[in-house]
Figure 1 (cartoon, one colour):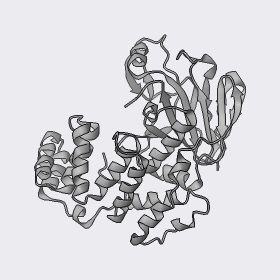
Figure 2 (cartoon, rainbow, N blue to C red; figure 1 turned 120 degrees about the vertical axis):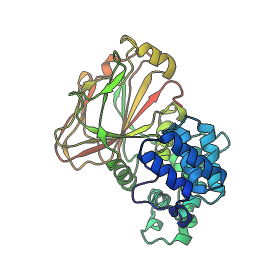
Figure 3 (cartoon, one colour; figure 1 turned 90 degrees about the horizontal axis):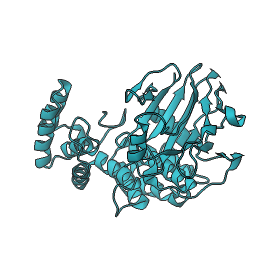
Figure 4 (tube, one colour; figure 1 turned 135 degrees about the horizontal axis):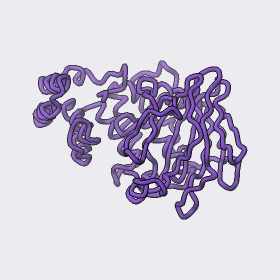
Length: 364
């Protein structure tokens, strides 16, 4: 797991690694993750912001460490109090996704601004992208000085991200709806760039073996953004999706960015969890049914690559920034078998889309 965004830099203090952090890196390099945790704990007790940040991130998601999210969040708060730039950026994500009952989007934006003021490059880039989302967003030029981050943050309209934009139905029942201009070009580019270094072959889950495997029916690549890989931009996108679907944020799975090179595809399939397949009944009982699939098209400079619903005679090629969602289940949660669909292969150029699954119960 990367400790920071590729190409990013923290504060000068964070770039000078302490002895505890350096020893933890050495242990991780040889696979001794337990000892790496011990070294980070030593650094945390010494009030080392970088050690606290790294330990907090690992405990937050159980990355080569026990899964202790409350402790992880507390360590990140301690690192932030000591001036940690990345810690402030991580807290902005936790606040935005509702991991703290007392904090919301306003507090999340404040933490992102603090991270930018502490010279955390990904935070600065996010403020530029988000400021450009507002009408006439000229304040997001690339030459904004460090002293202007708070002014730039003031240009971001958080209320707009919580609006429910209008769409048009390609099918009223089962519901398939298109929403034009769901996000702007800058957000599309940000999501593509964020996914590029994280792409791996997209996998298919086999219920009988309970394993995800490479399969000939799905040849594209994907980047799933877990709590460490996501950021405030992604969290705002998810907030807009949740509002559009009138669903609680906690019902959203981690966001994924899918990449289809020329000739890559996913053939006809369903997104619902089929209770007739062994082992899926348990998944529905514990995680809920996948009731809606929400797509955001990040580019349109390719040929082919349509999203196709053969049972509904729908073949749709999205425009950049456009969203499309469809309902996979009936109101009682049972599977809607009319929702067979496929991602057809691009015949020229690459296709990038966001894929967001939503459940009928909280996922985290």
